[in-house]
Each structure stands twice: as structure tokens, then as C-alpha cells.
Length: 243
Image 1 (tube, rainbow, N blue to C red):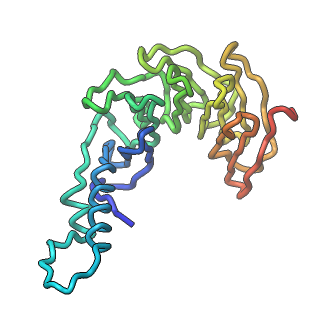
Image 2: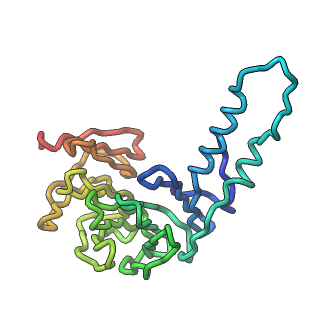
């Protein structure tokens, strides 16, 4: 186990780069941090090699030992990205690993070409905190959910607003693209899950059955099953072909 320290308040969101070499974290200290996990793995591997060396009858000069706190603090230094004026609530990395999107309670969405620390202009169409974001499988679209009861669809690179979905009757808490790129799912405090046709922008289906706010959703890899988690303490599985 390793512990990464640096945030000065609650950590609200975490995500990996597609190659697994970098961890992104966002928190209530209004910052996003980049952690180079490749350095952590190298340090841990070196420690394992040192401890696994065969014993010799000759006196050994022991190398300096790297303890847990040394790895955590001196060898793993995070890079800080600051763009938001309030808590960072969600993160998403593009499939090609070049762009990081961030969602905040300041009602905006940030976008970063994180490898060179270059920030794009923030997206500002929501009128309440942005609770969740997702990037499409082809890396072209960004979906954002908000406490303003809307879901918005953006061009990821240009930041152009493509569509606003408005069927929810309360805050929207989660969004997810189907892996086949055909549907966008959104879940809300109105206890419903909405499925949106990405080709037409139309509402494709409304899933009801939860007795509390729906807070989490995810598609199966084949896009045929949608899973939802709710404050009613249940998880529901919805089959696309059956509906």
C-alpha cells in the first residue's frame, strides 16, 4: 500500500490516464493534481529486488532503505493544476490520454492538455454545480451533468455546445456513454435514468424503478447492460435488448 499526500481538503474525484502511468485527483481545495505512478512503481520494484537478493556468506553493505514516508513524500511529487474557483467534483481523461476534463461546483468545466499543463477556456453554460462528466469512446464528445437538471453535450476539443438534454426534473448526478457510442445515459435525483440517442438527440427511454436518488451508472463492455446504483441501497441491471 502507498499513500499519496498533497491535497489540503477532501479528495472528491480520481481517474487514471489510459496508459496507467498517471493518476489524476481533484478535491475541495479547488485543485487537480497529477501523480506520476510510473515513478512509484519503479521505487516499489527496486525495493522488491533489494529484498529478494540471495543471501551471501560474505558481509554485505546494505544500501539505504527507502521507507514508506520517503516514497510518499520525497519521490512522488504531484503537479498542481488550478483553474476552478470551487470544489473539483469529477474528472475524465480522453481515450488517447492527451486531454483531461474537470467538473466543478463553480458551475464550469475545465479542459487541460495536461502533459504540457496547457489549459483551455472553461465551459460555462451550466447554471449550477457540474456534478459529473464523461468522454465518448471516440474522444470527440464530452457530456456534463449538473444540479441545474440538465445534461449538456459538447465537442471536447473546440468546446462547442452541441445539445442540451432537459427531461430530468431534479439534479443530474451521473452520465455515461455506451461503449458502442450510440447512447448517453444520465441518472438523477428524480429517481430516473434517461437514455439519449446520440444520433438524433432524442430521449430514447426512461428507466424507472429506484425509490431514491440514482447516483451511479455504468454500461457493460458490450453496451447491452446498464447498471445503476441508488440511495435506496439497491443496484439495478437493465437489459437494452429486452426493452
